[in-house]
Image (cartoon, rainbow, N blue to C red):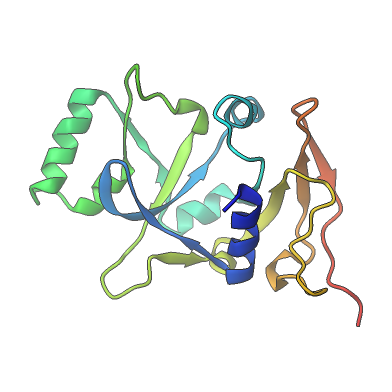
Length: 179
């Protein structure tokens, strides 16, 4: 899917699915706390699509999230080994990110929510996270299908990431069609 299609799918399904990260561990939902410069770098140089969901940091923290642990290669290997050997809860492995010359993702300022998976669906409900805004790459975009909007987007602010100047512009919230 394109980034736009993925956003639409998330809004209609109302869930964020967790996946196992490169470091292993339990599935996690990943977020970015990037600055505007960091976001422009990710869009311009890392080729991320300018589409996303915006949450309040406290709501992510309250849901069990927090910043990843950027670890030097030796520390990363040591901590990963402890997790994989069962000496430390493997959930902790989901927080690890290796930081060295070939792996530098600091501009993302990544946060994660490791998920409980035993007997649970590895997903988070959008309603539980307090969606505060949408980031869109097209100011005319709408996730409407057959005239209907996903309920969660009604009244949610939108920000447009303008590729021409790298700035964010406020757009009016999407409103459900009048009956």
